[in-house]
Length: 421
Ligand SMILES: [Zn+2]
Image 1 (cartoon, rainbow, N blue to C red):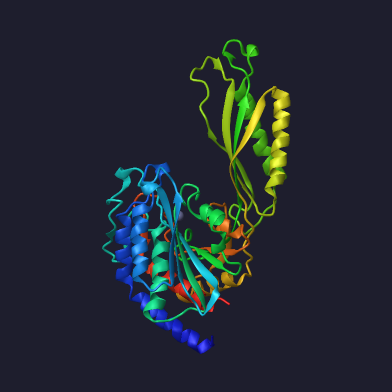
Image 2 (cartoon, rainbow, N blue to C red):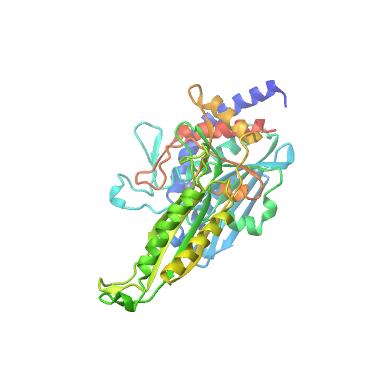
């Protein structure tokens, strides 16, 4: 594509997107009414919202729309629907994917909301909208629709395919969403494909996330011997051993895996004992068992297996010293390589943000503590960027989003799509 035609294309596309304010409102209003809360959080799942979105996609000129339903007996109609849509580009062998999740978190404490969380409300400023999910992650869904529709209405084909993944179950572990697709539909992820995840960001879209720490969650169950509180030597206090273990793990792991990487904030790996299970119900019982958890976020420069080897060594020494048995269960382990800062999509995204969001905006690459579904894509060796122009107020009462932000993100993505080489 020549430079001049590129510019003309984009001006036209940007104007088209600017004319879609009402479309943003319509999509947001309808999605907010259909709370897609995971059964694990007391909801019915994504079925109704996915049916609505599938019908909306069908109104547009996509070349392929596929639904991949992950079975889940606890959800409405026993499925967790994932929707995949594709609008072909001139080169059909490659796709720029926009990934969004359809599920939302519950409203939380209703008394903290000034409006009904499941009725979208437009502020008097004419731009801010309120409702559960309007930002996390409805805005990304909206941006995907805007990007596709602008091209379709103008009768344009992008240089490569535009793909949209509307995924289930992001808030509760992605078992029925991205994990299910990677496991059962690996062919969806083409070797030359690139991915944009608009599920984190800031009001200027300056943070362009290209790397995540490994997320390593562990459960430590210590077995000692229960006894009367007045006769500790008849038993073996598992709480004391567990407490010693928690402190030694924390101290040793921070000291041993102490490299710093300025891409991240905080710039080091973190190893924190977090959740603690209740033990005995009375003060006068020496606890025979102890259970605590650790949330480790490990910089990508370290192999998690090395962290595990050190954990096993410390556990062994506590077992010997306190004469207890400690069982370790892994609750989560997600490692992914970083997307290189000089990846063409990263460069395209940074350029696009500068052009669309104007002077005074300084987008830069960053790393985070982990937890987006970009990690699953990166683990396949594919490049992914997590970014977005959002207030960054997910899961809060009075969750809000901006129509203006959605329009500008659709322009950013159109710019990336038309320029990605
Ligand atoms: Zn989200």
